[in-house]
Length: 400
Ligand code: PMP
Image 1 (cartoon, rainbow, N blue to C red):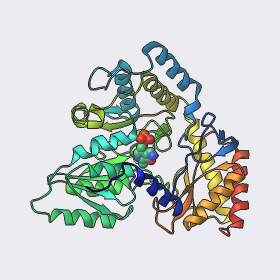
Image 2: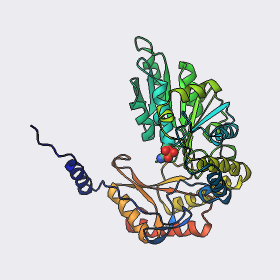
Image 3: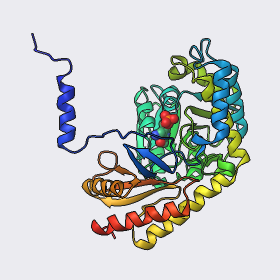
């Protein structure tokens, strides 16, 4: 018999990660997620939260969560597909559809579960996914759950996308369905998908367009309605727009908006993550509804996150930092080697700034970076402190 050990390999693999300095250790957030936080026993300036509009601590969002929890309980009691589909979930679906200007929306437990649940239902054997090279891991995993063919085009390269689609037309038998999948805002670089050009190419080939706008909503479009609104595109052009309540909306949950109530029903009939997993608690659904209300009522939050982004970006560029191709409040500070990014993150931590180092295998070997994410409640003084810390550490590492 082969000698097996059930868990030893896990420890060995972890040790390998440590040896190769690829291990990830969790930090502990000991306060609310705010511009100034308590992390691992220290007060730090938060520069790596997805909480772009600071709705996680908005009094109206908190109050909605508390009140709904008191009235409807801590949990929904079941999956939405069984007995956990509360009125609040239905209300949230409708509220989001109204906000997005879509005929229908469907909300899930997380954004990850939208991509894992919906994408595998779009294509099967005889169909094709066409995916941007830098799409988020949850899109990649969604594709992996299907038997369909897959092709990848170079990041945002429309000539390459056109080539991939032309090549796809030569396939025999012809593909029944083709879906183009793209992030709206790419989370590592903060750049935008060229959605109008993607839509144009999709139309030529009768392909569907699926956009993951996790980092675009709350930031792009009127009152933060997202990338589809930003480019003024319609539901016949971008057929499925997914997003998350865990970033700018400040809560948790995933969602998808589409062109008809029938498509919504197709989605909830087929998506296994929707069908086979519990509904978000009523307090979460209520908080998400409140967050949408706040987005509509307080447009200054979106303005402020952009103001902060412009201010920080200009200061960093004036100092000579390479800020990549950022077009949003996600600003990469390019470092080159993984070790440089890790060192810079550690030095910034020592200066009291909490940033995220991103390195291989998350990005290419020579494209390690610090990812800075700005929020609407960062003050000018805090941004100046951040820039000063970057300047001090960046000079030591000869990045500027
Ligand atoms: N898509 C993208 C582009 C993301 O960045 C994320 C979150 N990291 C997700 C999907 C998943 O969203 P959620 O946190 O709601 O699962």
